[in-house]
Length: 283
Length: 317
Image 1: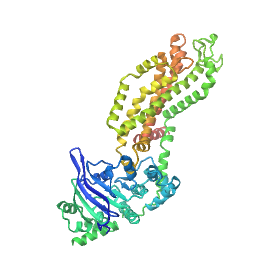
Image 2: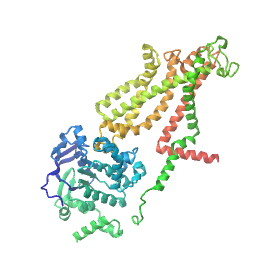
Image 3: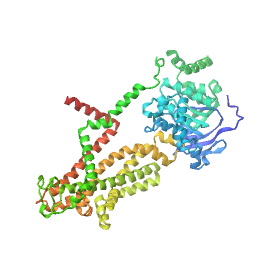
Image 4: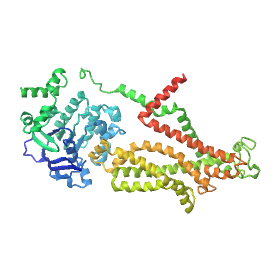
C-alpha cells in the first residue's frame, strides 16, 4: 500500500555479507525499505533471518556490504555515532523471557533508553511517559513497579515493545516477536503491534515463521534461503504466484491451516481470516 | 475453549502468592535454619563487641601488672575483666581479645572488601572485553595464584614495614584471583544473554552494560565468596601475626595474642587457647553462613533447603 517506490528509501541494504568462519550466514543481500513499509522476512531456521536483523543493527559486524539509513552508511559510523543512531533503529527480540533484565522493574526497563540517550526526555517527565507507554501497550499502570518475573510472556513482550517505542524509532525490527508466546497470546500481541504501527507509522522488518501472519501484515515479503534472498515480492503476488522454487516449497510445506481451523472454530479471528482468504484463493 | 475464558487483567492473586513465596525465602529461611541463624548472630555479636567494646577496653588491655602475672581464668577475684585470666605481663585476656577482635575484623574486612571490589571489577572487564586484555589479566592472576600467599606476604612484609595498611594490601593482593575468576566466569556467561544484546540495541556503552546489566547478577556470588574469604583472610592475618611479620604492639589482633601466648603454653594454656578459640569460632560462623548464603541464593537449592527445614519442623512436632 505504501510501496510506491518513488519515495526515498528509509533503508538501503546492498551486498550485505556475513561469514562465521567458513560458514556464510548472509550472502550478498540487497533490498530497499520504503518509509512506513512492513517487510516480512521468511525462511527456514538457519536461513539467516536473525543474522540479517542483527547485522543491519550492527549487533553483529558485517563482513562486507553496506546499510544506508536515510542515505547515511551505518557501517562507516564510529561506535559513538552508532550508539546515537540507535535512537532511530530499535529491535524487539524473540524471547521476552530473555530480553528483559530480571533484576529491573518495568518502569526502569522502559525508562532505560532515556537513561542511555540523555536529553531525549527530562527525568521529571519519565514517570508520566512510562505510564503513557504502558497504556499504549495495554498494560495497567500498576505494572510499573513489578519485576518481569511477575509478568506472563505476553505481558513481558508488551514491556519490550514499550521499551522499543520509548525512543520513537523510525525503524522497528521484529525478530519473531510472538513465536515464544502462547498461541492464545500471539494474536493479541500482533494486533497491538499493528495498531501501534498504524498510529506511529514506523517502518517494520518483520521476521517470522508464520506465513499466514506474514500474508496478513506485510506489504512485501522477502524469502531467504541459505543466506540469500531468493525472492522479494509484494505479498499478494508472492502468495498468488511464487516465482522461485524454494518459495513454492516453503508455501506448500507450511502446515495446512484449513484443517486446523475446521477442528477448532473461532480460535483467532485474524488467523481464521487469513486462512479463509487463502482457501478462497486456492479454490 | 482456551480463549473463551477471560484472561485475568491483573494477577492480584498470583502476585500475593509470589509475595508469600518470597517472604518464605531468605530471611524467614534463615530464622528456621538453626546453624545459619546462630552463625549470623555470633558474627553480629562479635562485630558489635569489636566496635563498641574495643574503645572501652583499650586502656585495660594495655594495663600491665606483675601481681596478676598468669592469673588463671574463671575466677572473679580481680573483677570480671580478668575472668579469662591474664597473660605473662598481667594484662587482661578478655580486654585484649576485645581489642584484638576489632583489629582482626578491620584487617580481614578491609582486605576482603578491597580484594572483592578490585577483583570483581577487573574480572568483569576481563570477561566482557575478552581478547588479549583477558588473556593478559588472567596470566597475571595465574602468577599470583602460583605464589603461595603466605610466602608472598612474608616476603613483602619482611621488606616493608609491617603495618596495618601493608598487611591489608598484601592480603588483598594475594586474594584477588578468586574474585577475578568468579566474576570473569559469570561475566562470560552473562554477556551472551539476550538482555545484554537488548541493552546494546538501545545504545548502551560497554561500561554501562557491565555496571547495570552484569554487576547486579555477579554480586550475589561475590558476596558469598567474600563471606567465605572473611574466615580464611582472618586466619591468614592471624598466621602472619603468629609468624611475627603481622601486627606489632601496640596494635594487637588475635594472631598476635596466640603468638605471644605460645611462649608460656605449658604454664598458661589460656593465653593461647582463648584467642585461638575466638579465631576458630569466627571462621566457623563465617563458613556456615556463607554456605547457607550460597544454598539460599540458588533457586534450586533454596527449594531443597526450604523443604528440608519443613521436614525438620514436621519431625519436631
